Image (cartoon, rainbow, N blue to C red; front, side, top):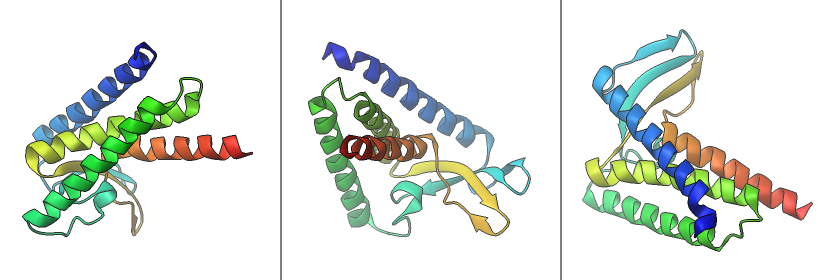
Length: 157
C-alpha cells in the first residue's frame, strides 16, 4: 500500500482542484451564463450535467436514469480501483493513467452523489464548432484514458 501513497496524494490534489474550480465557478458565474476568456475560442459557461462525461446521456430524465448512470459510474469506479491495486508499481505509465482516471471519477462522483448532477463549465469552440462542455475531472479521465491507451500500445510494440 505504501507504493500507492504518491498516487493517492496526486488523486487528492486533483480532486481538490476539481472541487475548488467547480465551487469558484458556481459562486462567480451564473448557471447557464458565461464569461468569455478568449473571444471566439474559450468561455467559462457552467451547466448542470446529469449525464456522463462530456454530457453524454444528459437529456435522460427521471430517477431511474439517474440511478442507472450512478450505478454504472460506481461499477466503473470499482473496476478502476481493482486494476489500480492490481497493477504492479513497475508499470508506471499504466499506474499514472489509472491515477488520473480515479481522480476524475472521484471528482465527478462527489458531485453526482451530493447534487445529482456534475457541474461542467469549460467551453472550447472555434467558430460554429463547440466541444462538449467539461470540467477538470473530465479532463483527468480523458488524459488518463489516453495515457492508459499509450501504455497498452507501448507494451505491445
